[in-house]
Image 1 (tube, rainbow over the protein chains, first blue to last red):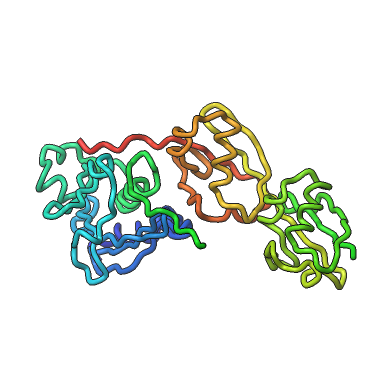
Image 2: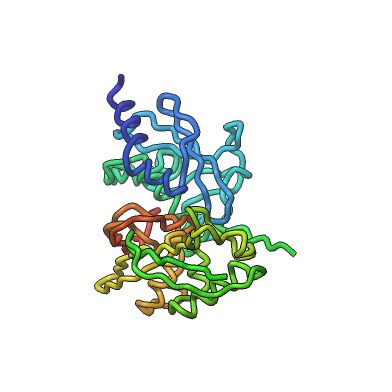
Length: 154
Length: 157
């Protein structure tokens, strides 16, 4: 097996990844070679499916995008948020991408100057670092995720 | 009828209390009586109140839960909460959510409301694994070290 694929598989089986599953932050939906789909649970009971293209895992950043159940990257699949949130999560058509120095699309198409930072190599577990970044965006109020109002029953 | 409640702390039975209850009393009413006797709040008691391992609902009739020498049980677990240079220990109901620990910590360490919302709980160390505040604390015998931390800013250029 390709050692990058081995590394990805090991990170999917790591204690840190499984801790996120056990805590209900995320769950693995599919893993086909370098393509991983993970469901992220938001604090307002909504969840979002993120597709992670992990080719060249370890050497290159992950390319993440939110997708619908059919795997299509459509605006409705992206979490809503205010201006702060949209610094990182570009959730408006036609610009649907994750603007972060550890996301391949963000770097290659929008900020090539970030590539020299090699920020994705800072954490030993690249996959968990990516998921933890998204987790914080969804869970920390200051980062601006727009939570659905709690429903009350009459 | 007599109802007995056993309080378990850190996996050990540490005290018990007995109160009188009428057949039509609900679990919530009886919890109030135990709370008065034990110096706990009824809400805390109701968060982890079981008999033979089955969690009791506040509106259930106590007569349906009691009898045959069975005792109610309330389990409390120890959290050693740290925030910056401060530290405090407290016992929480095992079935309480982690959000209760977060709220308690902000009061204890006098964290302003706005700042409190942007802290999160990490297990074992400031950079330890994060805890989901929507989840139950769970049951464990020892005191668990948990950090209330402010995550660092995320760069985006």
